[in-house]
Length: 105
Image (cartoon, rainbow, N blue to C red):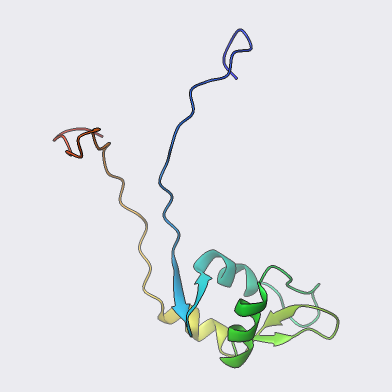
């Protein structure tokens, strides 16, 4: 909301999500990093979809928790270390006609 309780203009933004496709299933890098924090004595990790859970278990990236959900698997740390990752470089706005004006940050 802007001042005067009028709604602000609607914006469209492009979001970049880093991850890897393994066996045809998208595994977001932030989700894998969160999974790494879940050990067998912690509460279970329940964020993965059924397909993600299947792939994580098949590749020893996760193990079944003794309740419901998952905890980190033996192969997760080395798997995460092997994924090349660099921060996103910011880029300027693109005009309506698809041009990228120089010096536009």
